[in-house]
Amino acid sequence: MLWDRLLQANRSLPPGLLFAGPAGLGKEALALRLAAWRLCGSAKDSAEPCGTCQSCRLVSVGTHPDLHIVQSEVANAAADSPFAELGRRYLWAENTSRSAKPKSIIAVNPVRALITALLSHAHFGHGKVAIIGPAERMNVNSANALLKLLEEPADDTLLILLSSMPTRLMATVRSRCMRVEFAPPALPVAVDWLASRVGNDAEALLALAGGAPLSAAALAEYGFPGCRDKWLDDVAALASRTLDPLICATRWHQAGSATVLGWLHGLIADLIGLASGATPRRLFNLGCESQMRPLVGGIPSATLHELFDTIGRRRRILDGSVDERLLIEDIVIKLRETLTGCGQNTIQSVG
Ligand SMILES: [Zn+2]
Image: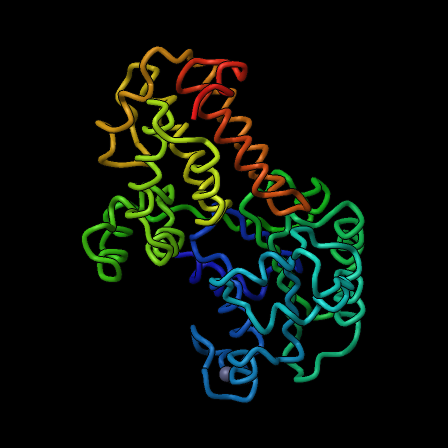
């Protein structure tokens, strides 16, 4: 158990930890639990924070002065953000106007403000904990500022970086942290856990979420697998030229561009697997093989790979200042070109 290993290592933990692994595996929750335990006034002989001391109460309401959380605005705005109030502490330093789209990067100002706070004394005498996530969203300036802190750590401070894409972190930052790897639980364990919350769809949801239980639970809240079935019908209708791409783009944009693109990325991965002729080891869209196989017919594998890469690139810029509607339109048109084997010049004539 990760938790047990962290508790045992407590006395010898380095000042920087990197919690690395896919989203939906509870990195945030474990970081918060470790923070609460370190800051708790009476948990030193216990394996859990007491939950009743002043420190624990302040952590639970998000106002502990020695718990510092730096998030991107996008991460803080997410409905399932476990940090919520705590995560807003350094957002002021972004200087964002109210009308601006939330930023996905962690800029240098919040990191500088964090460093200043960490260099002062702890308020409660139990040390300080800082959590930064998604750490790969730090830009070069903020990563460099943090690097100085990792090289000359503040007294009695634990820094926890969270990342689902640790390879994107500056190598020098990575190398200064002890890496704590998060991996999906065994499938039967995850299915049991999820089934107690969502019922019969647990296996399909876990497949869609790449085995990450918390992401699967979030997909259930969003309306999966029902909405997936509708989008799969849309894709089939695009392939048979019975759905106008612009109507499809409007529908998908309204449903939530990021979620639809995430699902579409998984669908193309499934089509690549099916096109290879082999029965894929694990499909994202479990139980949908009969709907997906007709979509593949005759499409060159290289074309599917190209579409997969394009969707990946578009997903990465989605949080920035792009026109989401245009981006989705572009993807829908490329998707139809791929599925019908036609170039853009033939698309204009289709209603
Ligand atoms: Zn306590």
